[in-house]
Each structure stands twice: as structure tokens, then as C-alpha cells.
Length: 287
Image (cartoon, rainbow, N blue to C red):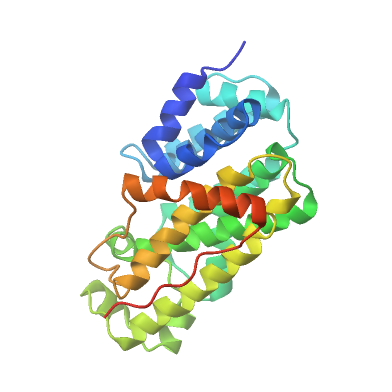
């Protein structure tokens, strides 16, 4: 039986305008695969951060993933995932890795080292790159670059949401970097942004932009979906641009793109898909 694509598209539109807009640039069959994978991933995130989120909700989500892999789906999103698994080789270990990232978010988050931050970015977003790669017709080399692109997007999310995450008891900024740049947790909790904090943000922004360059260099190895992935990446880079122009004021505000700004990126995304141009230019910093 064909999955309920209208319901799955509704999940995508509800949780991520960025991904939904990009998905429209996939051919029809691959678009369905992207919706199926993303809906599964997004509902896993909702099992942690949603109103009813918690250990039990995450266990229920994982049981749904297992049912899809056994070919015995129940919920609409499970049926979509099972449909995709029957068509593309998406290893279950990738969902295992993602679940480890979700488990991290269940407890207070505080990383000691930068490597832990990047491992987390792989688990909750680089894994999505691994899932989408076979749908878009890429091989192992492209998969590695897709992981980098996912990490770049997640790092962008982290930089955007520092203030909001603190309210949830989560601090994704590693202790070793806080010490290197002379930033105290008390400064963050009291929303103080001194030169050291802005320098830390600039450092992590540079890390994210390097990951975007590496990730987008893999577009040429995809059979389909180049424009879709380029549009999603450019929207996330637009968030980085806004964050930098604000002087990294992410403890009190949340950088975001308006609908018209997202649509304005479409021609550039199509150009990136055709020419391989890799990343947006870095804007001048704010005050």
C-alpha cells in the first residue's frame, strides 16, 4: 500500500520550511524518499524535545524504526520509511547513531572537548546526510561530504540557539573552547557577550563555513537533488550571515530567515547546483 504522502509532507512543512522548500527540487520519487527519511528523523527529535518528549517517547520512536526495518510498519511515518528502505540502501546503523545523539539531549548537555561537539553534530545531522546520499544517487565519497554538510547545518543550529538551549539545561559549547576564549558559563547565563564570546562564535562560524565548503563540493557526485541540497545549505548559511551581522547576539535573540529571503535564494541554489560554487561570502561583522 502506498504511504500517506500528504500526511508526511505535512510533517515536513510543520517542522522545517527549510527542508520542505529544498525537497521540492527533488524528482517525484526521490522527493518521497527524502520526505520519508526526514519525517522519521524529525519525529525522533520531537520524541526528545516535543511536549510529550522523554525516554518513553524516544523508546516508542525507536520501536517504530525497528518495525520499518522489519517491514512491519504501523504509523504513517513508519510506512513511509519502510517504503524508502525497500528502494534505497539505508543502513540501520545510521539510525542507531542518530538515536545516540537524541539520548544525549535527554540529559543536561555539557561537552568537554570540541571533538565531542563534532561527534554530536554527526549523530543528529550528519546521519541525515548519510540517509539522503543513496536517495540522491551518491556513492561512498559523496556520503562522507554529505556528513560534513549535515555537521555544518547542526553547528549552525547550535550557534543560532545558544540562549534557548541554556534555558533547557544544554550547553553545546565545549569546555575547552570556553576556557581558550575566556568565557565563563555565568557570563552566558547572565547573557553577557564580551570580546571573548564573540571570538569564540567567530571561531565556530569559521568551522561551520569550512564544513559547508567541503560538504557542497560533493554535489557534483549526486545523480539528482543537487538544487534541493544546495537550497537547504544556502538557507542555513543565511542564518550564519545574520548571526554574524548581529555581532553574534544569540543569547537574547534567534537569527532566522523570512519567507521572502528563503525564496530569494532559489536562483543562487540552482546556480550552485550547476556550477559547483561552494559557499556564500562571509559578511562583515556587526557591532
